[in-house]
Length: 198
Image 1 (cartoon, rainbow, N blue to C red):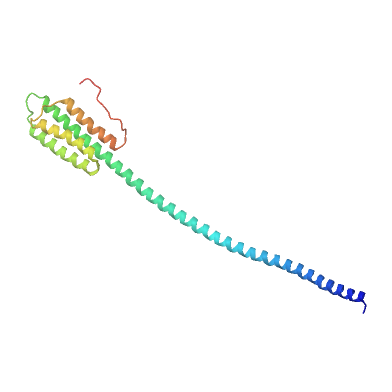
Image 2: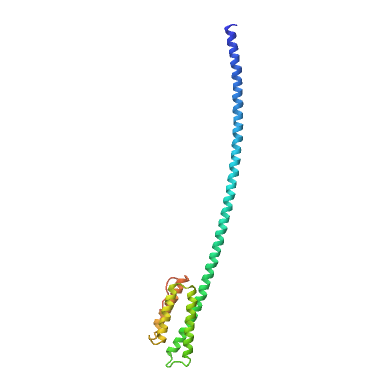
């Protein structure tokens, strides 16, 4: 065997192994891409499924939380509106009682002699005062109760002769009560004032 024959055999062997290596490398590269794509798709599908599960769970939890909050808000709103409505009704009733009492007191004080039904008027005054106090005590804050007490303490002292009857003092005490009520029901925080001439 000659040197040329040896080179031809080695070259043929290398070419056959090299060509096979190229084919094996090409096939392994192609198979590696297919496997990588399949694995990637499997991971994507798994993550998509998990993500969709999380999204559904989050949406369900959010809707449940929102429904719970809406229910609580509706209950609070109904309770608050009912309380406010009850408070307005009680304040109206108390104002009616106060107005009747002040009217009776005016008639009694303006008369030169006590009216024949003075005892009945005092009884009506006292019962009305107690009713108004009870109504207010159910829902009114302390500042409204204090204004009510100041007005009626003065009126009782007048009725017992401990203080002189003075309409401007009675009016101011009544306005103080009304302003406390207005502030409580948030009609207007600016106090009302008497700007007349009496």
